[in-house]
Image 1 (spheres, one colour):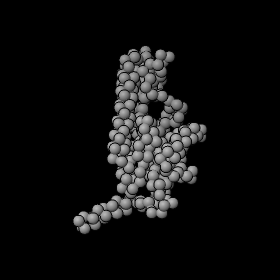
Image 2: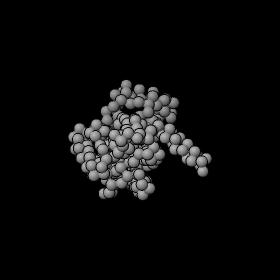
Image 3: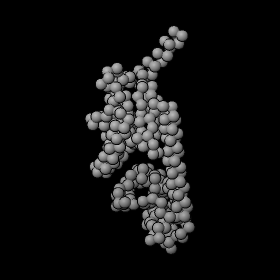
Length: 283
């Protein structure tokens, strides 16, 4: 039993040292204190401050209800930072970690799951770190209810919700990709612009034969004459040929334009009468 107690104490000590945290000390002035984390993802939200004020108000009300001490200076505001960045790598996320490492706090409060995490892996690792060091993570609005990770049930619901949110983002991405593929297949506009193609008033993509002429010219120069993509780009720039948005050509742009498989469908629209007068024209 003595050996078992020593082993358990060692495990707890290693967990705390690994994540760089200290347990809250026994000073009663530091017990039951919280750090709050507020995040807005866009600069517009940060400038307007509406979302920030709303989050802070709800978090303060929650802390008061729970009897948790939350000072104004302990509310961290992350402005214009994506939730896709791991928490500890964000400016205020790093400050949050340092504050917890001071040993002066017991709780972390945030408004919603997506204010603190977007990646399930980041959420799971962070919650495990907080729990191992004795901190409770509180979420004021978790599908309409408040939860904290000090209980097994709270951790379970948090994990399941994060997994479901990530799955939904994946499904949205798949649906978006399917929609774009359908637009491509029916020659409808699916992106801002494609060199070699124009958009008619009905939203259909149609070949721009002047640009298609230069696409064949680029391919011919590289395949038949052995020029590099960079040399072709320099030749186009000397001739004053502009990109789709008026920019200059780069070797990488030449490669991207000439390798776009979308050009393979241009024959469906019929070639101009004078197509084939140049040695580089292909059908």
